[in-house]
Image (cartoon, rainbow, N blue to C red):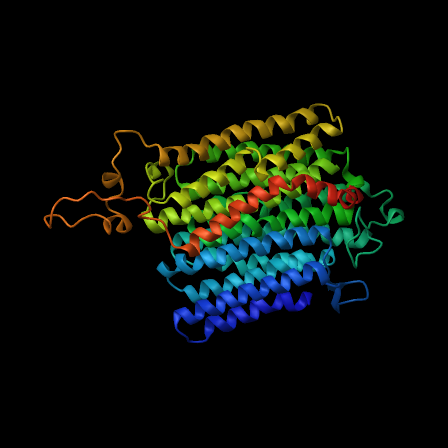
Length: 510
C-alpha cells in the first residue's frame, strides 16, 4: 500500500495530462486522482506496513515505513496538496500549459510522500532528491528568463545542500550499527564511534546546513525569494508549505534517528545550529518587513518562519521538538493560505504589491478574512496554531537552563512576532479600513472584475452600484482557503492533545 500510494498520483497524473480530452473532463480526472490519493494516504496512516523495495548490497536497502514523524508530515502534505489542487482548477485557467503544471504537480506529490515514508537514511536521501527534481518545473512553469533563473537557483542551492547532506549520510552509514532502518535516538555503533566524535560532529553539522538549504536556513537561503514570487500561486504554497519542509524532515532524520541527539548535545554543533537558526529568524523577518511585493514578502517570511522549526529542533529537548512539529503544521497551513491569497490578489485584482491592496476588503471579503486569520496565526495570536507552537518553543528554550541560550530564543521569537505583525496585519487593516478619502472605483476601476459591476457611461439613469464581493473568486478557491484557516485553528486548539498523546514517542527521540 505504501508503494501504491507513492506511485498512483505520479502515474495517474501523467496519464490524465498527456491524454487529449476536454478541460472539464481533465479537471475531473485530476480531482479523482487527488481524492483517491488522499484515501490511499489515510489508509497508510492507519494500516500502512513496512515494505522493503530492493537491496543494492547486503546493508544498502531501499525501504519504506511510517512512524509517528512520517505520519505527521504525510498528513500535512496531503492537506496542503489537496487544497492547492482544487484552488489551481480556477487559478490555472488563466495560465498556459496547464497540463504540464498538473503533471509535475502530481509527480512532486509522489516524491514528497515517498520522503515522508522513507524507512532509512539512504532511501530518504534518494526521495529528497526526487522531490527537488520533480518540483523544479513548478518554478520553471512560466518559461520566462526570470523563471528559468529562479528555477536554476532553486536547483543549484538544493543539490548543493544535498551534497553536504550526502556526506553526512555516507559517514553515518559507515559508523552505524543498523543503517537499514531509522532508530529513535540514533543507530551509531558506539565502539566504532569512539575516538571519531569530532569528525562525526563536523559531518553532522554540514548535514544540518545542507538539508537546511531546502528549508531556507542561512547561509543557503537565497533560492526562496527568487523562486516563490515567480512560481504560480499554488506552486508557491506547496514550496513554502511542504516542499521546503523536506529539509526539516531531513534534519530530523539525520539528528534524531541517525546520529542521535546525545552526540551533539552541549557541543559547538548545537550552539552553532541555534545561532544559525536565530539569525535566520531575525534576518528573514527584517527582509520581509522591508519588502513591498506581496509574494516576495511572504517568501522572506518563510525563511524566518521555517527557521522557527529549526530553532526548536536545535534545542534537542521535548519542548523544542514538540514546538517544532506543531509549528511545521501551523506554518504549512497558514503560509499556504497566505500564498494562495496572494495569488487571488494577482488573479482578480492584478495587484502584486501589498500597498496596492488598500480598500480591497469589501471586494473580496472571504479571501481577505482568510488572509487576516492566517496572519494572526503566524504572528502567534491565541488560539491559533502559531501561538501554541511558539509557546512550546519558548518553554523548550528555558527548560534546560543553557544560560544565554535559554534567553535568546524567546527574545528572538518575540522580536520576530512584532516584525511579522508589522508586515502582515497592516495589509488586512488597510484593506478593510482604507480611510474616508478612499474611492474603490478610482483604486480598482481598471480591474475587469470591478468593471463588470460598474454601469455603462451614458446609458440610463445613474444607479447606485454595490461592489461588495465583486472580485471574490469561486468556491474552488474560497473553500480551500477556509479549510486551511480552520486547520490552523485546529493546530492551536489541539496542540496540547498532540503533545500529550505523542509525548512518550518524542521523549524517546531526545
